[in-house]
Length: 409
Image 1 (tube, rainbow, N blue to C red):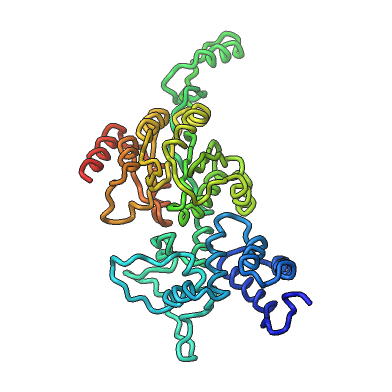
Image 2 (image 1 turned 90 degrees about the vertical axis):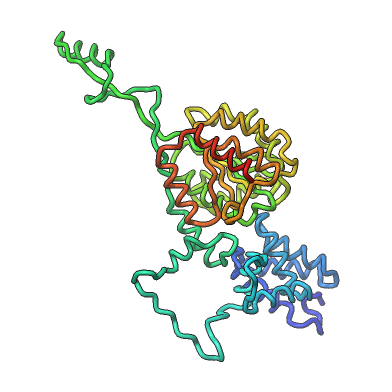
């Protein structure tokens, strides 16, 4: 008799099915095939050793690195780790916090909804009345609330809705003049070649032709931090990068933590799930430390001449928390700044009203950026898209403003 069928062990198979349903409700891609595979894995390793039981289920249900934390928390809560269960129950109680109290984890909220579906919909056994949404002044729809909600505060359902809205985003970069010309009857410059061709075709009748410069959106280069401090945001940023990559050409995307990884070709898959699976296989330093200076040095040495041609726009997504305390970071940021047309630093920490660049990494980055923007919700992404379609601020004025801000902090 196997461990799963042994008497006195409780309804293990039924509990495995409920555990799989919990993971699926929390956002993991779990289907009937994985439930059967989990049953076979438990039959093989038994339940005498909790560690073997954990890793058997982990091998079945976890496909990507960003699913590890969710599975780990779900396992210990569902299979009764007293400390985490107590923490989970505390999250399910009504919140009574001071404004300065730390916020709960996003994964815990998702698990709370998965473990207690429909909580808040009924009270005393009677369904609560649905709140009627009125289209009037001073009222807000669910979509407007979602636009302003921080990514780390979203539930599993809200994250899925946010992903659908991100998929619809486009990146209308302002077109810039190139070195090439095209025929234009209203152009300001005479086209001598076109004039000679027209003269030959007309048998000697001189017809003056005109030309103007071609315009084209500049290349877009994205450098995104995937360290532990950015892990709550990097998942949705990847959906944003995928949407941008499939919306326009000449988009180059790099992820960095302790090393630099070029994921441009993986994001070109039309199916976002396939693209993210490929990214998860290629990236080896997910949710680890951060060596911004070292990763930028590798980018400047290997990739800058290839992808920063023709006045590229660079989106630098990081919180600026550097494991190496900013060693060599200022030099590499200065080189990156001089190699591109526009360098925009996107920092989730800027959402805090009292934010000040106090760490050495932030102070090394700030003098070399043209713009400094928050990126923590859908509204901030929309504002970024709008800003990229407008003329960039003068570089000297922007640099002076950020330098003054850093010195004041």
